[in-house]
Image 1 (cartoon, chains in turn cyan, purple):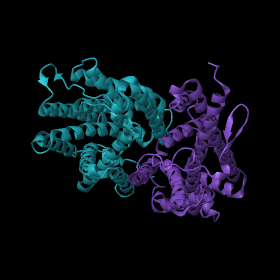
Image 2: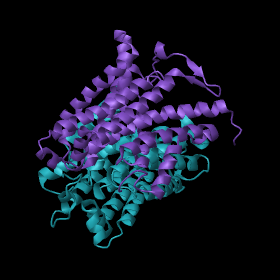
Image 3: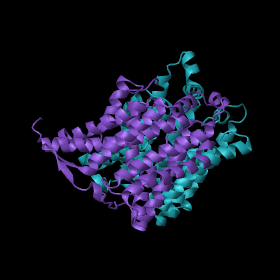
Image 4: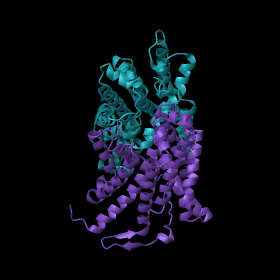
Amino acid sequence: MERVVDPRATSREGGLISSEVVAFLVMVAALVVAPAIAYPVFLMKALCFALFACAFNLLIGYVGLLSFGHALYFGWAAYISAHAAKVWGFPPELAIIAGAATGAVLGLIAGALAIRRQGIYFAMITLALAQMMFFFAVQAPFTGGEDGIQAVPRGKLLGMFDLSSQTTMYFFVLAIFIACFLLIYRIINSPFGEVLKAIRENEARTISLGYKTDRYKLLAFVLSTTLAGIAGATKAIVFQLASLTDVHWSMSGEVVLMTLVGGLGTVFGPVAGAFVIITMENYLAPYGQWVTVIQGVIFVICVLLFRRGIVGELAHALGVRL
Amino acid sequence: MFDVPPQVLFGQLLIGLINGSFYALLSLGLAVIFGMLNIINFAHGAQYMMGAFVAFLLLQLGGVNYWFALLVAPIVVGIIGVVIERLFLQRLYKLDHLYGLLLTFGLALIIQGVFRNYYGSSGLPYRVPAELAGGHNLGFMFLPNYRAWVIVVSIVVCFATWFVIERTRLGAYLRAATENPTLVRAFGINVPRMITLTYGFGVGLAALAGVMAAPIYNVSPLMGADLIIVVFAVVVIGGMGSIMGAIVTGFALGVIEGLTKVYYPEASNTVIFVIMAIVLLIRPAGLFGRSA
């Protein structure tokens, strides 16, 4: 049976680690220069989704768990941080931490339920729990229903940097993204990450080696939802808006699509996938519903013909790890 | 708490049974498909919607009535399902099950997107057939004929499906092929064709549910999108190992949802998900599931 992730794509092989360092430096350099060429708001949106997709990929790519409800953590973190910044007057850094905490707490509850079943059931449970919390978001008074929470203040970072400037905001978002990206890289290359990959390859054998795999899966789930929370909270601060779009199941589908297009289980794939999908949506925005149709077509093509994704294919062609 | 007027209580129970009929038909289709294909058919909601639209379009364009649509729509959508299986799904059987979910999710996006593009997101009315208009006053409640019809048909269809799978020779082949397709092929049975037809049948069931739903809910491109997520929760609660389990769970959850609307309406959207969470805590394999 072909696995979701080719084990060779994520195993450490001597002498090839530098390919990731080079790719990382190229990515950072490109992102630092990017605001000179592209519109900063567009870049910030893409970075938030890139972080969201990286968080999602931590589960599907390294533990083999398909969460079909990641919009829950993204969207609810956006609501809580928007509420904290607007109503409680939190500064942006605290608002984002509040969002991360939201992701962690919700992830702990949902994860503890979902890991009780495997495979396809896991995906259905995460989706169903996310849908439940979507209905809560529709009904809860503080979320503002269809309007969402609007006019969220961006505030001053650490009381010093005024985030109403797009450039300042951009570099703040970039710093968050790079910090989280490095954290994920550290997680997947730690002894903990090796156990996660072992669970992905053969859970029964990992249990027989004495690992309490449920604890590893739950911790990985909470790490992923916390990072998804940071992504959602950052997006709420950037766009000064938290709305139902962010908690809807179509958002969960979108993050799956980004990761699939970029390459499941590759370090850089989700970033590439997020930029491709956000760019595509930007250009196709005038065509309304056809965007959904095109997303569906990309899903079908990726699953049938292009399972490694952009970065996965590139890494395969070059014979390196990316 | 118990001072609810009987008309309200029985009215909601009826709505619950109607919703339960659709949960049962859809989760039954999902279970049958999953049994043979090992794929969770995310496009099930979209195919239910297609069933309703085929009925709607037959009436609008050809003046074809409900009764004919009830027969034609499942066949048309079932044939589309057969084509989907031959074109796409059969390429996935050797891959991780998750790819089936992703591919059918993509198909659902395509189907729903195309219909939304042409018909918008608002509901289109479909009239109750004249033969089933009106209703009966049962004393404690008013029972519209059409709703009684939907409940009866779905019970009949569900039990017919159960009978075919559990009590006939064809069903024995199906169950055997679910357990061990290679061995069944060695006996000279065309398993790939059986898989294709099973998918067509499961999809046809969804379309049948769609036609029956058309006069009750309106016909709209997204009518199946949220429904399928509830049906997933139903499937998690019941477990997909048992056909009867899928049927019973579907009806029971519909009724529980209806009762929630009477006693605590705020929770009526979420009660099925809450029950799913409780079942996961107490019986992780699901009520009728054989193993996790």
